[in-house]
Amino acid sequence: MAFIDYYKILEVDKKATEAEIKKAYRKMARKHHPDLNPNDKEAERKFKEINEANEVLSHAENRKKYDEYGENWQHAEQYEKAKQQGQYSGGGQQSGFGGFEGEGFGGAGDYSDFFESMFGGRTSGRQRGHSAQFKGQDFTTELNLDLKEVYTTHKRTLNINGKNIRITIPAGVENGQQIKISGLGGEASGGGPKGDLYITFTVENHTNFKLDKHNLYSTVDLDLYNALLGGEITADTFDGKVKLTVKSGTQNGTKVKLKGKGFPIYKKEGEFGDLYITYQVKIPTDLSEKEKELFAELAKLRTS
Image (cartoon, rainbow, N blue to C red; front, side, top):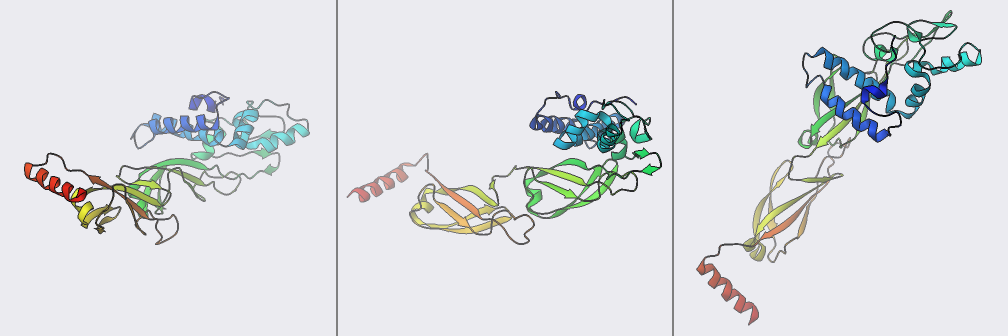
């Protein structure tokens, strides 16, 4: 079985930092994502390889084992034991070593053993007369959402390696947040437990509101007359409109707080941040002659 170079798959150097690996993975995952390449078997195969490479290289411990043991990094403990027994002299990219046999150590296949265990195959590491158990590999995926979508709890169907999985996305999920769903990872070998599914959320804000933690911020235009005389205006919140009472003499840049009109707090049902509105007083332009006369009269009154 040919050795698969995870660094080559992600097109990064072996000395690449964690941030560089993450950036490369996101770029390539988007390019080859099955949703963007329907019915493209090559893109699907490439997407699986990219996920496999990221699963190994994005975790420091896994990467360390991979750098030393190559495609058989999952079985590092057996290699170490074999070293101690004098059965193995090193070279992580070898397909097997004395005293061990089976798919996990030299079996043929289109992809690496780890790849087969993630995407439908089986991986086994059998010592003579003994069957080893391994937990199935964890899957990682990225889900792009709009800010409006995470304002309420909703369900979403994901296609994970050819399987449709229905998940519930809680309101208030934050950009960059990762959640774990147990048991939705790869099949295990030797009767071990399944791996887990890790979902990283990318939340994009296309609204007129600025989000900071759980609080929302917006700017509302206020005409000069309401600012001077006071009155009632209608303003937008994230889930509808509200009427606000403006005090006479309101200054430009004045802030008001609407308690509980902010963003939902993750996993705290019914709890929200606050909405802060900043008034931006608009000075009228293109005044008529009559308006100019009236403002002149007002100016005289203010200075008399």
